[in-house]
Length: 495
DNA sequence: TCTGGGGTCCTGCACCTT
DNA sequence: TCTGAAGGTGCAGGACCC
Image 1 (cartoon, rainbow, N blue to C red):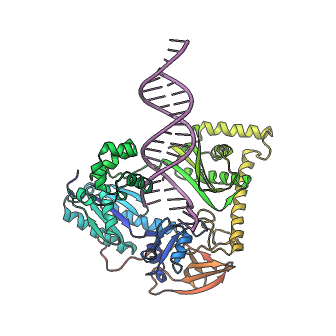
Image 2: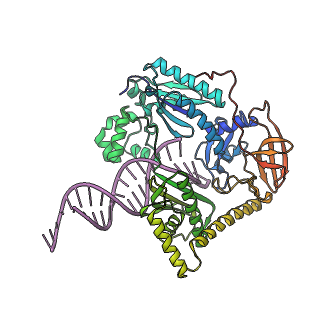
Image 3: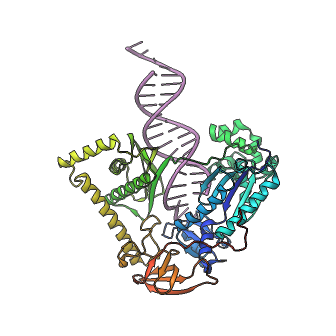
């Protein structure tokens, strides 16, 4: 147990929404909701102004729109958030070599490893200086929690929100935690919370009083034992700077349930290809292929197959996923499909298993054994065509329905201009950056029925910009990269 | 009311080997 | 040769997190 607050937890406030407000002066002080805008989208982040209407993360977007009909609804711009995240992580790296990012907007820092003096005043000073620097560099606010362990530092930053700093003095953990809900502890979600409530435990004090044996009996060995320790304020998990990914997966929820088995099969192939692209980009290969199917009634099942060795071969993963699909009943409709690879290894060279599989495919093709699949090459080309058709189909559907948004963030993302795409096929995503030959930089406020509305303003604009409407195929309008956010002048940027 | 996407970890069961 | 225990591995599902 540490005797000084040596762990810092940083949590950026309403990160995606705050980044959008910083980038778009007209949205500052207004309710902003970022998330999937399709019929089955959910809220990723709501600004504090939107939270006042009851909107929160993971809420279905349709419900959010009912609660806050006048909020700005935007699709996420991950490239912008990643850029800001890198700036913030760099600032954290100046505090200590031991930084553990949890997501784009959250991280633990081991201050002791960074040489911060082991006393309360020094930790508080480091935390306050960090918050100022983040505001100076990004224009955004972050909340800081300081404590002797990861669990308590995280609880502290939660209490500090928004835009604050809370320090938990080591030694006071147990009395601080005692009256809190069991849900404050990491690993206690809705299901475990309910389970404990039925057993008469609602506060952390109840857990500590119940004893380890009782918690193990209720929740199992691993979960029960670790929860008992946490309930007594004990958490000696170290800050871990580097973590290797253990799986790579992609999944898509469809606007409308799929019933056509042929379409389901082609979607699985497309997902397998996307999954391998990600796998290869990470320089990894994997041994177990996992197919995920969520049916019309939201029931979810997974099927997996372990290969003889790891692979990063598109054909091998595609065929394994297709085999797994054969064993799944999809009558009634499919809401979501996913393909993943686990059992990751670090090699990228051609493996013998993939070569053997390729030989088998070529032999089968030469023998004409599988009509329609053709050779390896033509099989791949066919799959690529199917992807192209899928995207084009999505565009037509969006146009016909007057929908103002993409079917899903994953599909057609990045469309909207540039890259030699025909202008007639463009899609304009609410919130995304554009540039007009005459009016300059702006962002898409909405689109539909052949028109796109753009607000022309930049992160540094002193006042909300003007709004203009164009035809969706206006040749003078093109998609643009996000502009860098502007820090708050006058803040301390010294190191 | 109607539930995304990308992950991690744990549990229980079946099967195989020693 | 049969039997049972123990451990490893594969598979499926559930819970949780951001």
